[in-house]
Image (cartoon, rainbow over all chains, first blue to last red; front, side, top):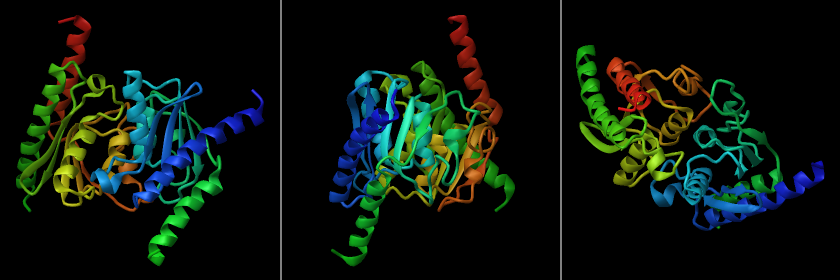
Length: 158
Length: 158
């Protein structure tokens, strides 16, 4: 596959994840969004709803993975790619491993909690029974800007 | 606190987690159980329901943490202890970090996926904004036996 084709496709689905991030921002949740893609179809969507659902596990990725698995009628998501605007935390990276997700594409790195190398490299570990392919930095500046802008507005009381 | 008192208390709540593991076994799910305890009260219970719910995140710990947080009306579980029959995987250890759980007590180690030192030491990492205290091996032989017996019966077609 040509690299440009791969990038264009990844950017297209990352824009879907970004739409989800904006939904979180509108609900005053930290704006992270995710979609699960199989073939050319989005089969799961999610945005962070931790505050609204009183649920520490209600990250964008978890909600998107659960929706996708329910739709497929199987917890096995081998053929799927998870697109998420921020580098996943260990819980979400672990959920992708549990779901046998084929690939993760993320936008901005998360130096505070990222599990794709920024804080720990869970996705690079060889001891698990499944390995997830990882691509980072897709529309990364845009994804980071959404979070930065959210916190700037929160601080300034806008 | 006297060590014996601590152990007796931990064993008491681990027996509640074991009850949950048996519920999973009866549903032909890998028998892992968990409870979340605040003070002297069990405020969340869960057993593995991955197959039945078509949900890669439906591990005992995740379900117990979600129930506890919903009951408290907050994703912050600082005052809580998570009891689980098996060493948590990275997803579940990560969920405990996300939920700011005070302490994890587990039964049997999991050499294949354990995130409390067996496979990775996620709970020993210092880079996250929360650290969970960990105690392992509480009624460990009993907890391991439940899983071994489950797979033995599955293989023999009993």
